[in-house]
Length: 123
Image (cartoon, rainbow, N blue to C red; front, side, top):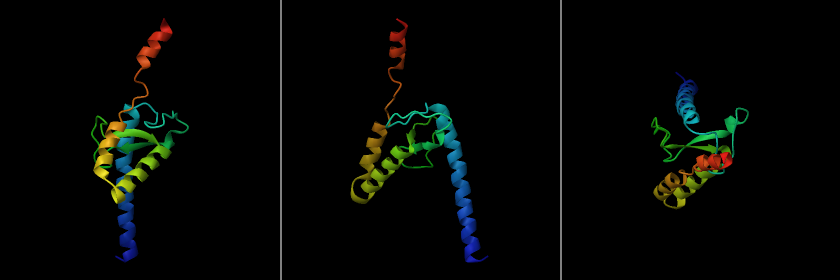
């Protein structure tokens, strides 16, 4: 097998693996969570859903618990910003601290007071 053919086969296999992995956890996350960015609270629908990504809070894409505890939905822009900040910390700062901060920051719930708000509108 030539080097190009071997490289093409490795790349094709990696792409297949990535597609399988992403389709599994992405579909699960979209069923578990409201279609809202966990950082900027931008709302999504079927027309722009492709711009909503699944972020792994601990940056390990193979850590996909069924309960979604390592995931948060982020828009493309917030997701890119998150990874840029993480990469800067890996190069210049403390990446472990950033992972801990991300887990805390990812706990934002835009629907936390929804029940109270709905109750007030019924009164």
